[in-house]
Amino acid sequence: MTFMLTFMGFLAFASGYLVSLEDRFQRDGLFCPFGLVANLKESPGARKVLTWFGIALWGLALVCYVLLPPEASVSTGDILKGLSAGLLVYGFMLLGYAREIEFAKTGQSANKIPSLEAISRHEKRVIATKAGMALGKILVFFMGMGSLRWIVSGVV
Image (cartoon, rainbow, N blue to C red; front, top):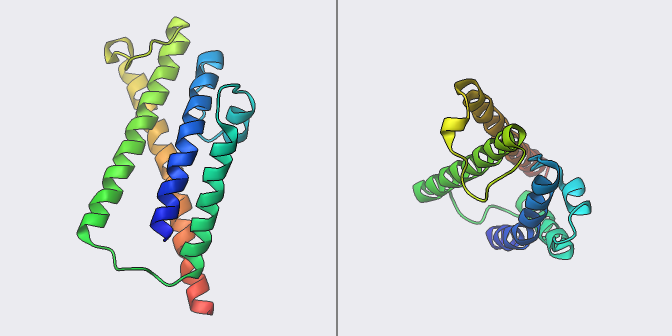
């Protein structure tokens, strides 16, 4: 149940939030993936109701994860799926921060993957560090939820 709520929440969230993220990037030239309220507020084309519904589903999944007993043990395939999802998120963050630097240099953003020849070696390190820190924020959140579950299961 937790997995299904998380997945449905992701589908609802992504369909609206990615539009608002792109709108803000095209207008301001900033890639701010964690500026949820600001991105949604300033985007006329985003599906705001669907995005907030996705967040509500994530909240429900979080409550189910913390309070309900584990559904099944984690297999090697599950670990590989989690690692591949982490790599996809890291790639998304890399692309976003690379486009932000491209926009700062040229004043415009192409609707394609930025060429890495235009980005200096130092900027590539900055992009990789920013993407790693963004992924780290997400991992810290999940570690916090695991800790919360461990605390609640020890109390109950």
